[in-house]
Length: 328
Image (cartoon, rainbow, N blue to C red; front, top):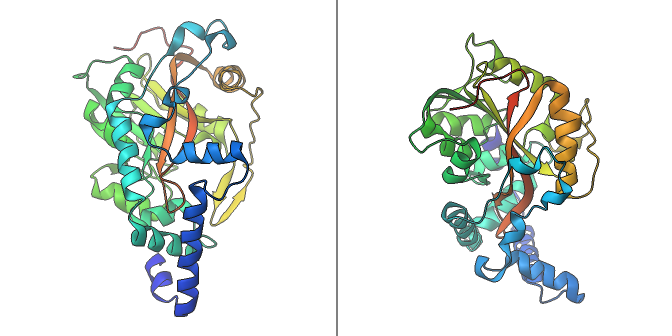
């Protein structure tokens, strides 16, 4: 259906040339040359600068004194590692493919009123995400490199890029995804695709369930957390939860953004205050407790305007409050 939309769209050559010129002017403006305000200009230039020229420590920074006392010893300090650097540098390289980026932008502009950005990215084969490296995953879950469990379920797996980081530690890897175009990409990677309403009805439990940057894009987030809790292996099952800070729930339906039916508002302005809020106002209320957590950059491949996009993530390992057995 998406392919047909693209093939049936005919535009005058003058319109296309004008559109390309507009994109090129936007790209030039984002370099900061035409920004008069020195503060704004400095900020934009830093966003596009090489990793060696910016302070990446702020991506991982946490002030433990602002965390509630029970959370302070659970924080894991991370830093820029080789896998994260490689993703950023690859994104920077892709952003220089001018005609490819112009094509992506043109198709996105045509389709965005009709389908979600996730589906557009799946159709174009772009928009990969990065949440954690394999070493960061192992450190967060407190496992050895050769640790293997039976089943992983990655909810809202996208193109499977992050799933691939976790997959070597599991005998079976299951995924869910709403986007039809992303589903095709997941099948090509040989992951076992489950229906978004069927994963909790398989008749077996999961050793690890990952829910990465999905809670703020879900219509019933508390119901989702309760279903996850019931689907984990008792005692040793763990939930890996990533949430964008500040926590701002919205649903993308087609090309529109709407508020979820079950809206969660987290108190606090700083990263640390929002972590406290998520722990007390969400996780504990549905029967989870924090085992460990960290601060990581949530990275996405860029476009003609930006080399890459970055959001603040809080990534938690959660266990059921009833569990008395420690994870391996």
